[in-house]
Image (cartoon, rainbow, N blue to C red; front, side, top):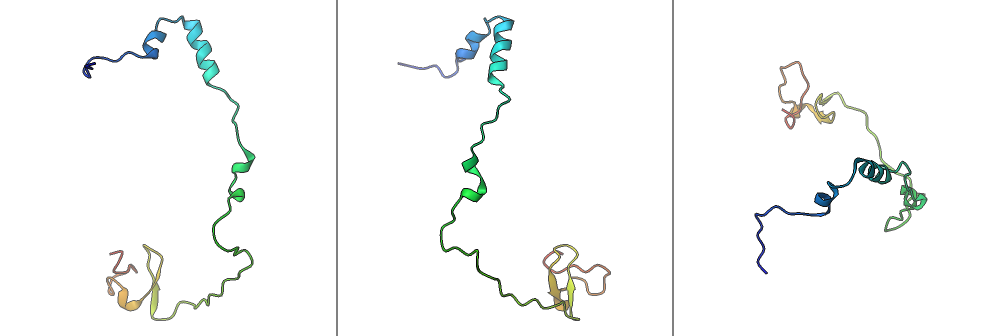
Amino acid sequence: MATDYDAPRRNESDEASEDSLEELKARRNEAQSSVVDVDEGDTAESFELPGADLSGEELTVKVIPKQADEFTCTSCFLVQHRSRLANPSGGQLICVDCA
């Protein structure tokens, strides 16, 4: 069977235009329910991540304070060495990556 794809399509909503205004209001109120169906099992705590349980692990990272020859970029907020300063004579401390 040949189909004319340029012809306007008719569907159920075209037939609904013949309904009365009261029926349309009733359908709209039925479709808009104020009750939200929330499943308590869908919370983030219920997801089990693959791999080992790392809840008892401690991070052992040594934090070193900013040195005298380093600066904090005012754009990306990363601590960089002075050699990475985009404009050493300028007033703003911006690294070459952000410049």
